[in-house]
Length: 300
Image (cartoon, rainbow, N blue to C red):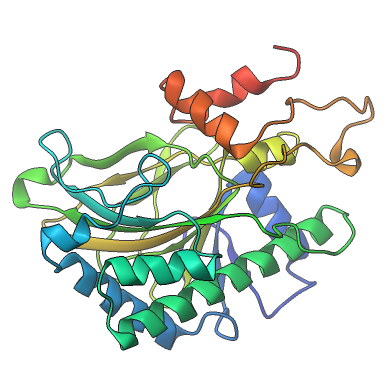
């Protein structure tokens, strides 16, 4: 498999532990294979069909998908961003929220069943990755992401011939801890920034998942984990659909670096913060590409 980012085999642990941690430190991004016991390819394929059908709904039904946080509900194409359309669900780890999302969009029994199964599987996968990250960093085994909300976004890019070479999504980091992305199987466009500051194209790889770390992961790891900058470019005139799940952070408690991850001076790089405070700080200061970490430094 040719890919610029590390490939992590979920069926090869603990042998893959060091590779996983190095991927988090050097890239902030990795591809996962052999995840079928948790999230099978058949469910991924069925979910993609459901997602595409949701975008075909009448606009008046789409708009029932309301925002809990800014940008967490339905986003229609606008004059300033005509290429992008999306649905959202604030917490796919909540069965009540998932059911409400399905009800608002008049989901059929089959669509509802697929969405519920997918939400459960993605959350299980995130917990499994969390356990492996914690163990790899020398922490006691346990559920690193217990009761953390997981935001769900399904994205559609309406790329036309005149858009080739343009940006579909500007350079940014994710504000949460961990993102699980089910890419479009055939239409690329995602690019990530390496540590040299160069953008590297990440081409689709059907049947796999792409995971990346965000700002909250950098805070938690005391700067060891990379909150990878990325963007989406229009490479061809085609419809591009992706499914993203964002593990945000604790609901109310502040996230801080565990004592075991501090250096010899035992001083954290960043002040403890909640996800909501970090998100607001990004918005107020119009910081979307990781700059907010400078404001969170403990010595700032």
